[in-house]
Structures are given as structure tokens and as C-alpha cells.
Image (tube, rainbow, N blue to C red; front, side):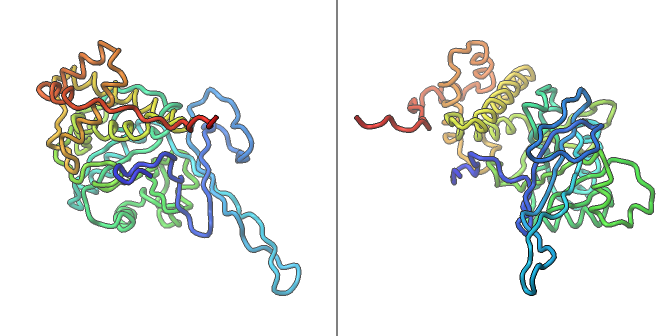
Length: 339
């Protein structure tokens, strides 16, 4: 992990589970009802996909063959269907924001959900995080404690394997008395909620300015606020700048996805006559942030249209960025063998 940025070159595990449980993410048809083997390819389908989390423990005590000796065997596997439907995400975000406001917790949405509300049409195949909503919470409260408060306040918020979900599927009142895990397992349209605290994972240490989208898909989004795009772009540039030279296939895909997001945001800011707000990204100095932009400029200086838009959102900071020394691009390729 890059200690200065807080980002890892590899994806974090899908869930941190006790008793050595692992989580596997699969994309399957919304109509599929059988559990797919971890080694089996998902069935091809034209139906809208859902993301399915299949969890299993590596080992579980089995029936003893001799006194005091236990045979190890796999636990039953659990299937959780997660919706990629934007309307479900909007419903979850509206409910979540109303509760966080009630708790007095300042928050703003980031990630693929925020990009989608701004008009990005990046497909789910490239952006798996479109399957969740990701609020950034400006709070010192322990996040597990926050999740417990949400679950106590609203039965639709429920947890499985230390993950928080919002259940969009209709259910009768008797279901509210079931164990929360049962409610998630029986629903086909769960929304995964991944809460991050300010100051972690490359985020600013506090939320200064937010941006509201008035209406999406006929939903009035009162209370649903995004981290302002003029600050949001810096969170994406920060991750891109730490991994753009990687030769690992998974990271290269992530870098390509991040670059698409950065290009979209440069265009959005330019079209809306906005400039990057360096002073509102708490936790990094302007010179540090300009180094990231200089790195991006060096990489894509040949794209005249993109550079013209970038200059328009930097304004007076453009010359300040160009005055920085041009850093030599680092490579993650292994050194050549000695003769």
C-alpha cells in the first residue's frame, strides 16, 4: 500500500469475515436461481445483471470419525443479490441521507453513483462500483456503530457479513421481525452501502462544499448531496497518479476506468464554467495537488482538446502547474537481466 495516498494496488477483499470466511463476487442474470460454482462461468444472458456475493467458510467442524477428531468440511454457501438498477440506488440514497441528516452527520456521495448522477454513462462492466452507493461521512463515529444506528432506525437497512445493505423489495410487516440476514437473502434488489470516513482512502479530511442534483429519473433528490465535482475530480486524480504506471492487469483496468472518469469530469467542469477548488481539498496542499495534475498533463499532453478543457478549469493555476519540474515517469517493469 502507498502510505502517503492510502490506496492499494490490489483491490481490498469484498468482505472482512470472521471464522476465515471468504467472499466471491459474481455477475449473473437477474433471472438465474441456481448457485454458480466458484469455478463455473456465469451463464450468458441478455437480462440486466445483478452482482451476487457468494460467501463460504474455508473450514467448518464436521462429524467426528474418532473421539476427539473432527472432519473439516465447507459451510453452506450464501447468495446475496445486489441490484445495479439506478432507481434502487436513488431510493437507498434518499433514505440513507434522511437518516444521516437526522443524526447530524454531514455526508456526500462519491464514486460511480456520483458520476452517474452527473451524467456519466460509463457501463457497469467497466465500473463494478456502480452496484453500490458510497457516502463519505464527516464523522468520528465508529462506522460499525453508525451501521447499527441505521439498522435500529430503519428495518430496510440490514447487515450480513459486516456489510450494510438496503432492501428495496417490498415485504410485509411480519418480515420486519425476521433476522436481518434473512431479509437480505430473500430479496433480489438489495443495494450495497459502503460508507467511508473523511480523511481515509485519499478523501479530504472534511466536507466543505457539496453539489445537489435536483431530479433524476423523476425522483426528487432533496437531501442527496455529492462531493462537489471541483473537489471530486481530485480524489480520482489522486488514485490515478499512484497507479497509472502499474503493469498488473487488474490495476491497468482500474487506471483506464479512472482515466475515463477524469476525462468526463474535466469536460463537466469546463461545460459548467467551474474551476478546480484546491483550497477546499482539506488534507493536501495546492502544490501537492498540482503535482498530480502535472503528471496527468505529461501523460496526455498530446490530446489538444482535453488539454484545452483542462486549462479552462485551472485558470491562473495553469502556469503554476507548468512551472513545476517535469517528473520522470516511474515504471513498474522489472529491471533487465544483467549481462
